Image (cartoon, rainbow, N blue to C red):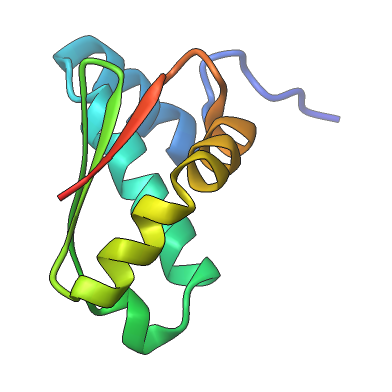
Length: 98
């Protein structure tokens, strides 16, 4: 029986390694947050989200719809806690809705 070599990685581990090396780890996490929101929100609501970024420990979500923007602001601590539970508390400490 042939053993797997230690150097054999799953593709996701390889992408994370490159992200760490080249400094775009935050962008990778932002994509994961956006994917999470796509699964969590209704499609019409998700389409109102213009962008998701991660900068200096802040999750920055830009939303086109005033109603959805207000909902996110009202439930800011709920969403921040959900993101921290899913991706780790050490990655971000605040959420900005623009």
